[in-house]
Image (cartoon, protein in one colour):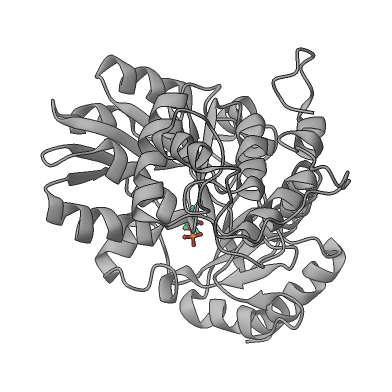
Length: 399
Ligand SMILES: *Cc1c(COP(=O)(O)O)cnc(C)c1O
């Protein structure tokens, strides 16, 4: 079974079947190929592989069968021609930039992206003559104004972390292409189960497999999906040379994670929506940020662009940092950790953790208040999650 078969398969079928090839052993599940190198039948075959005259495995920094199965499955789910797996989500961002950019090029990025990505752009790519300007995610005019003749990439995440703001992907894709740029979307929060950026006009999709693709908080890894030339040749070329490749074991965990991705994303979304509606009715809560709420300013865009609204919900408490920490410290079930996309629900205080390195002024500009709390809704019973949060909310009411 390959996803090139003439009858097009639906998402759920691709999630279970795409990319698998069986060995002579006839195994039903996908095997983990824990081997660093591969053997050749003859010196002539080795020479032909090394010269590229015949395809085939040489060394696991270049290709590995388990990694390839994961790549083909994720490519099928994102609707891309090619996928390259990486050792982390950050390695996917780095490989994309190293392969496609050169000294003098320019990036326009949303200012609400993952903190390490901002650090990579600002502190490291800048050393090699690649400059980045940051704009407000939903402000199309700001994106347009920031583009220069040397701009190569428009870079964003949608919805954003932690305020769940959206980018209009077809509008930004049209802008990027009119100005000779590539649109790169980090699809970590939605995954292809909820949003397929390539269909909406994006050129490249970045993943941190660490989050929902794994889905159970076990492995670090990432991927880039896109066209055959940029991903299959250019980014692959950087990766096999520089080496931040995905391990076969982690690839296998992600491969099996993809089989249940759409079911998990539906469950995460249902739980987050129920929590968001419940939180909106709590007197201690000033505001809830969730695209599935009618009160979200981009609710209509979310309905157009996404199949569901995702598992992350943020909310601002009236009582500032003290209230946020009281709520967090009174949980017994929800894990206090900055990670997300796990079967276990997590709770975090962005102002002092994920966004703690920003100055107060930068945080205020970004809308990250001291009373802001972010929850990644897991797969526990929603009633138990509510009870866990109600304990802290009751303390706030008593205070
Ligand atoms: C976690 C994350 C990353 C980085 O991925 P790692 O696997 O931790 O390197 C990139 N983008 C987003 C949106 C993330 O949440």
